[in-house]
Length: 98
Image 1 (cartoon, rainbow, N blue to C red):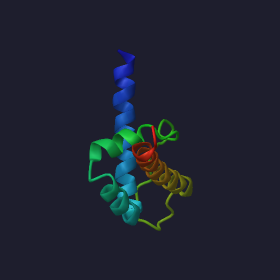
Image 2 (tube, helix red, strand yellow):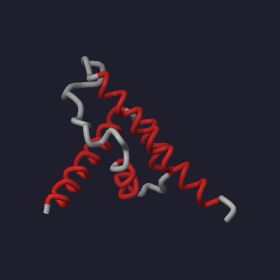
Image 3 (cartoon, rainbow, N blue to C red):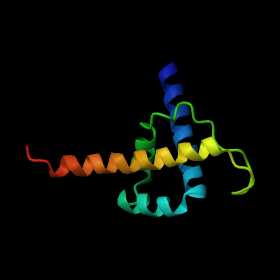
């Protein structure tokens, strides 16, 4: 009962984080989206494994450069790095000798 609410809340946070990455880190989004084969489901699932997602509360409203929350921007950078690392780990496992 509670797990379903937690997972839907986590998914909502992941989607919100991805939306903010799309707004504030457009160049990274293009690269990540292309690397993931434009598979939004996989991107959102990997964002849900990001350690900072549970405490992510989003950004203040306003335009870029209007006193945006700097700590939130660091979260975006770490989330982008997490997505790239998830992709690198998948690529590594595909090519490892078994």
